[in-house]
Image 1 (cartoon, one colour):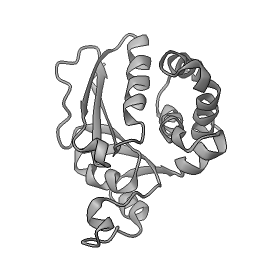
Image 2 (cartoon, rainbow, N blue to C red; image 1 turned 90 degrees about the vertical axis):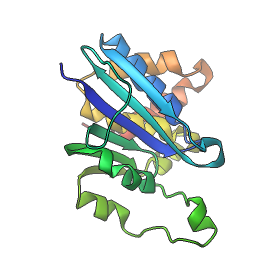
Image 3 (cartoon, rainbow, N blue to C red; image 1 turned 180 degrees about the horizontal axis):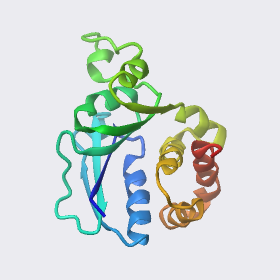
Length: 190
């Protein structure tokens, strides 16, 4: 199998590291060689966070270059736009529609771009979903990451049971039921 490249992008504190851990666990359990590389930047200050997940028969490097990502999974709309140059021409963006103002917007030095979903759809295949509302419906706004993983699961041939086993391995038992609900809401009806 050719190496597949997934970028998980967001803002610090959104749970992208748990999402990459879940995805990495699943891929390893299915027998793939997996490389995960996390770039934190100013993540603890609300800055951009990116995780590279590469998998296949044999993966030699954890880094994804521009134009190589098969999937960009974005926790925040502006982050999807920021990392768009890394998407392959036939790639897909799976994104939360949530908007979090970066520092230039907070200070008034810039304005958050309008109609980002529509603009992204004009440049790529985009699956945009309101993960925050679904996470709240599941029981916690903090479950945005698992809602997004549920949505991502639609683009893999793995069973829901495979995803649930990895969720059980990566999430503490006291939060498992909530995260299972969040995953199911994100996945939606097939």
